[in-house]
Image (cartoon, rainbow, N blue to C red; front, top):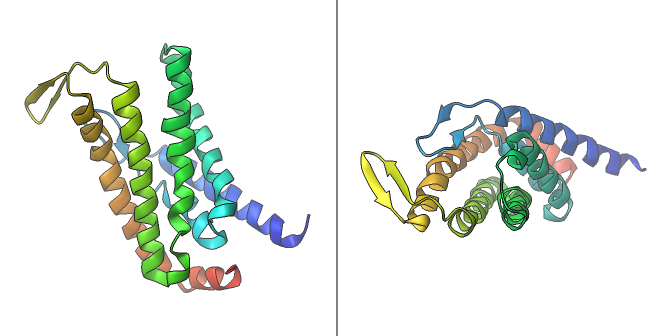
Amino acid sequence: MNNKIAKKITFSAVMIALSTVLSLIKLFDLPLGGSITPLSMLPVCLISIVFGIKFAIIPCMLYGVIQMMIGGIFGWGLTPEILIASIALDYVVAFGVLCFAGVFRKKGFIGNVVGIFFASALRFISHFVSGFILWTNMDQFTLFGNTFVNKPVLYSLCYNGLYMLPEAVLTCIGAIIIFKIPVFDKLLKDNSI
């Protein structure tokens, strides 16, 4: 294995580990479920920004598999069909699309921040689709004092939007701060393709 590949794998492993640790720290639990974490998406997004989308696909999907194992999806009593679809949409695809954070990486600072927001939006879409297709059994839920009945699309929008929007905004703010650090700028220049 050459030095460049070893460096990419090592960097990715450290970023996946950092994202995993940050995902375990909950800043806020939200009323419908989900929580806000301190920048847990940012390290895996950095893999794509530093090395490109193609390289980041596998590390981002691996991060999704780790999140699935931590989340305990296998204890939910799901049918085999819903379990497989949930693994795909809520974990492999939802976290795999974080590789698109590097889509605008050649555009510099603004491109990196926009790419992170874009990847976060794709993750939201995957969770949203899963929410109203797989979890339509939410016949009734209460949010901000209002009760809603038989509204799976609204439920999925509220459930996923309440944690994904703040996560995306916090991740972008964290990225803005990190991208101002000279060491990170050097890392980008050393690994530009």
